[in-house]
Image (cartoon, rainbow, N blue to C red):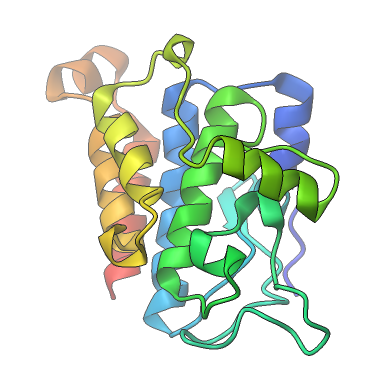
Length: 209
């Protein structure tokens, strides 16, 4: 396995608190690119969460495919437990239904929420705690103080649609977030260019191959 220097997104959020919307969108764009590549090869991660994202020098890396599966495989293991992490389950996983690529997109929406708020959308120490928390607030909304552009809020909202078929693909999420964080030509010239934006374009293009 590849050795990745750095630390997880979860550890970073624990130490620094919420990210700016720009950094949160950039990280989630990179995650979306990785998911687009995985989904292209019919692999569903099923456990996207901050602790499974490494902030390596080359950029965010999605790790721990230990519970990954092909689209349509059951979300329930032989022991009767649902694969994944309750706080980042898609609704279909909560119901024990088969998880497809859309489940990863839902989890990515929750990762964006955690990046922007500094905490998971639903908290709890046990599965039951999380289920109760989700029942009380079924649709996570970003607090007004996050000061997030409407374009990013719209992406967040679409990724958390209860119906899997209404969620965008990983490729579309990557494109939308790229558009949201790409500066205008005037801003690029003023700042001497944004090298990471050019890299992001290449990653999005690579996710389509």
